[in-house]
Length: 550
Image 1 (cartoon, one colour):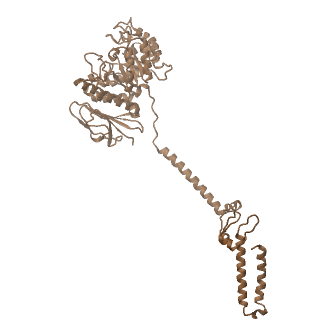
Image 2 (tube, helix red, strand yellow; image 1 turned 30 degrees about the vertical axis):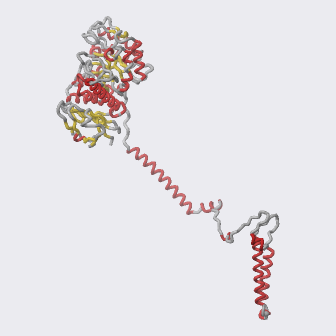
Image 3 (tube, helix red, strand yellow; image 1 turned 135 degrees about the horizontal axis):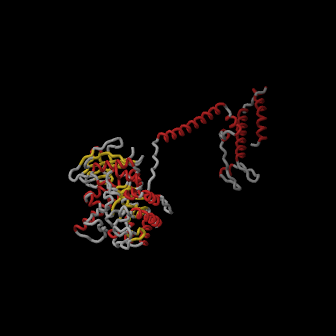
């Protein structure tokens, strides 16, 4: 139905209604009702037809005829598509949101302004609260201690090869160079070599500091050794004790001390220029007392030497003194970096007190520990073959630097001479006693390597504080701690026959600790948890335990 027809129909409707209610309305013919009904039905049919035509799609300006037959067959001409419009489409309300003007109008209302301010205040209060909490956590957290200044010689043990011929199969410096890899496996940080210079016994006139003795090699072999060691991170310290083969003393006699010390000054420059990282001298108390000015020159040349290698050169003195008071006084008066003494040769009770006294008066950078002292000899002979691993653990866990003679890592014994032949294991088949001895050497070396690796990487063992926990005539226990790092407890029993139970307690100690290594794995296996208030050590055994910072 088009708009004109709709308008006419609406216009005629009042006229029809007026005709029904006019003066002649009561005078209706008998069939007036039927006629009027037919007209109404015809009008309704016509309206429905017009609505159907309006719903039909138009193609090319042609209106699809409302043919009942065609509609009934559902035919569609000229590609026309039947489109059905929902009758209630006009009743559906689509939400399109607020436009810009409406949003601006709503945003300016007092309610939304208060809401925005409230959210902004909550946001900043939350942010400031988190910031304040973070600052409070930082302030209340325990501060980390600054790492102490250390020297290269405090980062691992020193390994002393006093006799080149006894150490290597080739009996020269080239053979020592070939063993550098084996020393690197032990985490050795310094190699003490020699003496190797020409020094006829008790003959100061023919002393030649700068000449390598033909008995041990030549200068080129020495240079090769230094280069090989440096590649493995091992420093080389050369022993330049003047009269090392004589019997009249390290510096010959008092008459010759001045001339020998003067000649030593130029020799120091020579060897430091060849790449050595330090010098060891015996009898330092004599030269420091007799010619103090020359001793100052000697010390200055070594300790202030600078070249392409950035680290400091070390000056090691050797003395026969054994009391902690004498060693401490000599360490202060000579001002050497390290002093090799016999302070650990005392009995068990005095040994712990000596360690405590030296630790309390000197930096760990200046403490040097050796069971043999300045004299040649090996740990298995000095302390006993059964206690080799115990002494290895002791030296590697004390504060400062440990020095070992060659062969101490395998329990090498002195056999009637000062320099026993070094034993190098091979893979050849052995029977009986020889096979058992080789297994013992390998076990001893493995223990040494394990503890040495721990010392290198654990801060508490490297430069931690030393706390004495227990000390008796046969037993010793002490603690190594650093800041928030893992704590280590070393315990020893030197008794030959009886075990002992240590009842350890204190503010620093928890109730339980874990075994790291033990010289008696059957009684205290690794990773076992033990109660510190009832720590039992069998005779001749030692253990290293750990527990976390709390």
